Length: 554
Image (cartoon, rainbow, N blue to C red; front, top):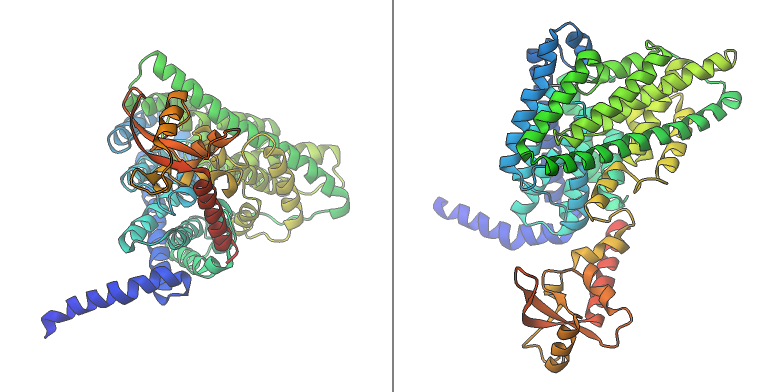
C-alpha cells in the first residue's frame, strides 16, 4: 500500500495542485511557499557571491573591497598590472565556451526576460555570466556586483518556473520575488529591493504581486543581516540643511549629475563600439578581448588604484569629505574610463555601484564649490556627496524611487530626503532626454529590443506569425493565386517573423492578408505555408494588450 503513495501524491499534484497553482497564481498557498523558497535561494546566492568576492580579493590583494584601493597601492606594480589580465583571460574562456555570443548577461537581460520571454532568462549562459562577473570583480574589474546577482536571481526563478511550467504572469511574479531578494541582500535594503523589482525589472506596480515580492525581499534582507549584521553600508556624519536657501543648489546639482550620468553611459557605449571595430579590424579572438581590457585596467590601476573593484572605499571617502576638489574630479574622470574599459572589454559586472561612486565624487566636487561660494549658508560636503550619489545612480538605473530608497537604507540617513529627492528628480529628467530612460533599456535599444516605449510597442515582438497564420488546410486561408502574385511582388512575411515585422506591411495595402512563406539560407522563398490576415493580427495584438493591462492593474 505504501508503494502506491508516491504515485497517488503525483496524481494529486498534477491533477489538482498544478492546475490550481497556474490558475490562482498569488492566491495559491503554493505560490507564497515558492516565493519564500525563491527569496531564500536568491538571498543565499547573493550572500555567497559577496562573501566569495571578499575572500578572493583578500587572497589576491590582501584586503576586501572595504580597503581594496589602499591595499593595492602597497603592492608591487607588476602584481597590480597582471592580476586583471589573468582575470580577463579566465573570463574570456568561460564566456567563449558557455555563452553563444561571448557576452555577460546583465540586468538588461532580466528585463528582457520579464517583458518578452514570459519571465524567464537563459540558464547556462546566466550561470556562466555570474562566474565571469565573480572573477572580474575579484581581480580588479571596475564594475558592480548588483547586476550579476540580479541576473543570478533571475536564473534561479527561471529554473523554478520551468520546473512547474508556470504561465507568464506567475513566472514574472516569481522573477520579481527573486530580484527583490537579491537587491535586498546586496544592500541590506528590503524596501528598496521590493521597489527595484517592480520599478526596474517588472516595470509595473501591480498590487497582486506586491505581497509575495515583499516576503522575498524581507528574506533577502534577513539573510544579509545574518551574514553581515544589521548595519548600513556607510556611516555618515550628521549634517543640516538650510532648506529655503540651499535647495536651489540641489536643483543645479541634479542637472549636473544627470549630465555626468549621460557621459558615463555614452562612454560605455562608445568604448563598446570602438572595441567591436578594433576586434574586427585586427581579428582579435573573442576570448582574448577581456584580457586586453584587463591589461588596460591594470595599467590604469598602477597609477590610480581607486578604480579597482566595486569602489566602496572611495565612495565612503567621498561621502565623508576626505577627498579634495581636484582629487574628486580626477577620480571621477578615471572611474568613467575604467568602467567603460571593463564593460566594453566584456569582463562582466554591473553599472550601479560605479554610478554610486561617480555620483558621490560628483556631489563632493560640487559641494566644494558650493561651500566655497556660500560658506555661511551651505550644508556639509557629505550632504552634497550623498545627494550626488543618489542622483547619478538614479539616472543610470532609470529608477528614481528605488535608488532613493537604496541610498537611504545604505546610509541610514532619512532626514535629508528632500535634498536627495530633488537632485534625483532633476538628474533622471535630464538623463532621460539622451538615453532610453535607463542604461539597461538603452542597452536593449542598441540590440534592437525596444522596451522603453512600453508594452504597446514591444508586445508585437512577442506574437509570432507562425501561431497566427491560417494554414494551407484552413477553410478561409485566402486565394492561392493572389498569394502567388503577392510573393512575386515581395509582399510576404516569413514564418519566423513576429507581428512587429508583419503589421507595417499592411499599411497602404489593398489586400487583407499576407502570404506566410519559408525561405532558404539565401533568403529565397521555398514554399507557401499559409496566410496572415490583418484582422487576426489586430485581434491577437488587442488581446495581448488587454492581458497586459489586466496584469498591471490586478
